[in-house]
Image 1 (cartoon, helix red, strand yellow):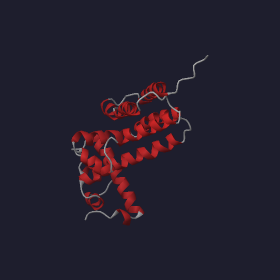
Image 2 (cartoon, one colour):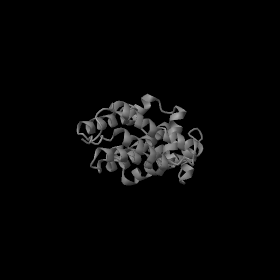
Image 3 (tube, one colour):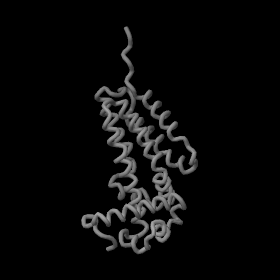
Image 4 (cartoon, helix red, strand yellow):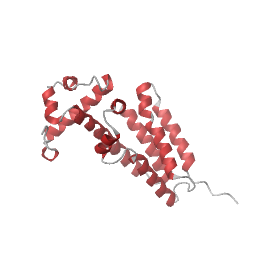
Length: 210
């Protein structure tokens, strides 16, 4: 079996794996998945290809780890910011803005994942294995949160949370593809406009004056 078992990895081994994954992300973002050979990734950080082979079972294993690391980094960035808010509208705005801020700060992550998905290197089943759940999990979790906030009176109660969650995720999930096509895409402006749009669509209506 190639690579140390996760439960027996030392701090140094874990640090080396993170370094390799970071180099792989930058290499895939720069030259594409097909050209991102293990030798090329190794050369980027001055190690031998054999070092990568010690830590990963092959290129497919490394690709899966890229997706896992990007997903985990996104969650670690977004969730504390969302749950630090105390009102439904603020939580939703922060959810949208922090998703897009993460993409802005980690453009290579987004470009690499888009390249991986475009290549077909990971099928839908592969993505399920990576994340332990299906690829619609983000929309479903958002739907549940919207329904909860509706029930608590924090958001307007007459919209369909499933439809709203799908719409919000669609506006977020299109951004990595925009980043690939247009390096000058103004993601900050986009984030403000999208957050304002969904705030207006979900905020409770003010009581009618008598």
